[in-house]
Amino acid sequence: MRGLMYVLTVVSVIGLAFWAYRENYTTQTALDDAQELQIQIGEARDRLAMLRAEWAYLNRPDRLRDLADLNFERLQLLPLRPDQFGRIEQVAYPPIDGIVIDNIVEVSNQEGF
Image 1: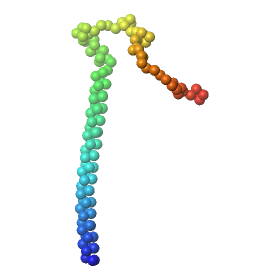
Image 2 (image 1 turned 90 degrees about the horizontal axis):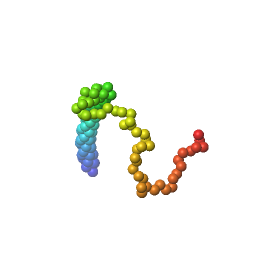
Image 3 (image 1 turned 135 degrees about the vertical axis):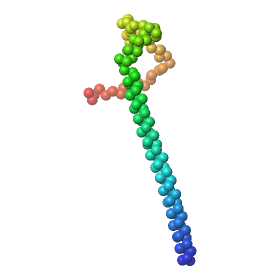
Image 4 (image 1 turned 60 degrees about the horizontal axis):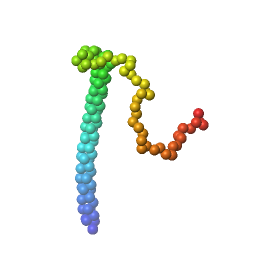
């Protein structure tokens, strides 16, 4: 009986050692993958920051003004005049047919102010 217990104990220790060895390699692989993803995320953020900086540089008002002046004739642009601007009252908003607002709830608290 003791011999059987020793054999079972040795077999279970070997099995657990094999399982721990496999889990260790699986964990190391997962950590390597996570580190690679972190590197890729950092590179993507760097590229995004560079693209945002380039976009801001290309959309400088003085540069766009110079480009508009250079291509004024070719693009058939018209000069801006004060009468081209309107007031907010002149904006034609779409009708609000079919929208019924029921149960209006007052959310401001005038007592606290």
